[in-house]
Image 1 (spheres, rainbow, N blue to C red):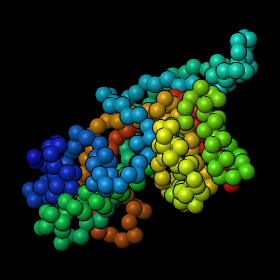
Image 2 (cartoon, rainbow, N blue to C red; image 1 turned 90 degrees about the vertical axis):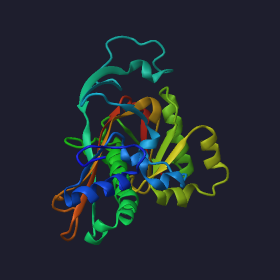
Image 3 (cartoon, rainbow, N blue to C red; image 1 turned 180 degrees about the horizontal axis):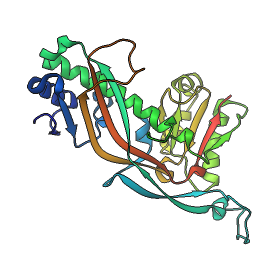
Length: 286
């Protein structure tokens, strides 16, 4: 493996980068033929789902992607739709659009003493840069602003907000019901860890019941406390994934670090497409 090339799959991202540093020092740059957020070593031991784990992931063969999506009626119906009250989705409008793969990046500052210690450097990249990149991806998928970056669920037009019910559990289950009332199945919940531990852990069989139904829960700080995003993550959205990543030394933009220092950047390329915004609900818990 050489710098400015593709790393072998048998090496961890940290080990591949450490090997490149041996050869090229602070000019090292390693490309990977995988999405390295899947390679964080902690995932092998912790039963915790990253936000990307809620969605289906499709390999993107091209930079630009054409996709379909549906919305609630954008104008007054001109024809009578049979059983529209029974099947809300019968009135949905059909659309198509284009998007493109966008970068998600994360940074760490590297103590120069690690440059001549490949083992320490490898573990630092694997356990610190990768987790920072996972966090950046969580943020992008939940609340990315769009434009030159990934557009997240909370910024997607057509996602419905729900007022709280009498209890947090009732609010959560009401959102699950709303997904099914438009023809979907609530198979994913994204919530802040504060709410997970405050309202749901230890509440009888609730979490087991949800797991038995195939509902996956991802905990991430990127959802504001007091709200959850419930949806049909499998059918209603897709991550288009380039399957390419890079780790390199680079000059960080302003505002990344509080002080100057040697910096390493990790980057992945992907796009989040929401085909059915009608099948996602942002529910207030209280």
